[in-house]
Length: 430
Image 1 (cartoon, rainbow, N blue to C red):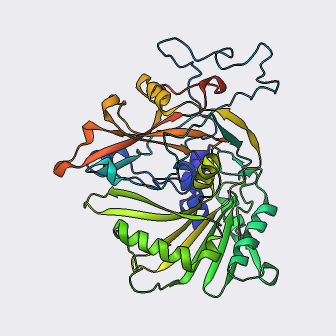
Image 2: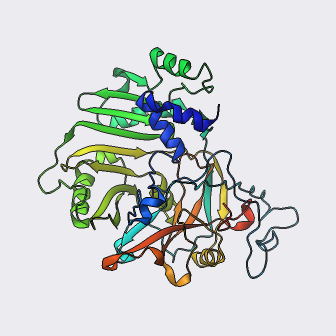
């Protein structure tokens, strides 16, 4: 049975499995994309701006294995980057070539930010172009998924450790609590098995989350080692900190300061830095901002890693009450190595040359439309490698709106030196 057929037939089954199917079809769960048709009508959205960047990599896809072209020809040789004939640098083993995966754009929409000026699109990214970074770490994602989102490499021991850690932040002892998982009950198994004449993918019924509940709170940990804390009933914050969906930057920042001081035991960060991100407008010209915290300790590289991988996020509902928190603790134990990285200026040259990934349906219009640059890591659940990329915000002239509103699309260039990549993206060929 094809994965697509299986997923489409799941519409009447338990909600958890429908949700998993949607996550398979539209990449990882936190990244929801509007179809291009809606965007063409003037609906432009950007979800999870900042550190929670979408994952493009899916099983069975791949970019054309074609070298990128520059004015001097193909990518740099080993000699150009200081490797001798034995493939080593400074007497150490050469870093392995990274199979930097593929993308599947299809009908999933595009990444766009609507604003009157790029200065309205903000985040707390600690990276600065003035940083002198010669190398950045690359990690192998220990968890992989097949076409049915059945995981390999997930570690329930680490999931339980994170569950215990989060419970402890609230003064709870996991040993005195009931821990369950989301494996289907027998009735659900029978329904699914019967519906597909016994042709259920191997491992599809495997649990994907561990969870525990206490009065007023539920804690869940998934395979990517993200802990979700749901508050029921939602927590009422003091007057003045009840931010809603379209609260101003100043209101969100004030609430973040309050949470940093009053919920430091939950945040669990030695030197918490506030990351207010967002600022893009919806079709009603309303702005939205979100808040996270990350550890600002350590050197430049350490701060970049902590910002991208280990944030703590809080969310308030329409009534301004705290209803959800997330603690991200992905497994970075499988470090591949510290890879040479190119400069932002070099990345811009590749961008102009067409060596980029994007979900925007328009070719990069020209260097004069580059509005903003930042360095981020791809942290999606389906990434084979957690690698750094330059994220360019490009003004898309075809999508300018009335009232002076512009649309800035997201374009990505690998930050790792091209000699260490299996191939470079080529616009229009993926």
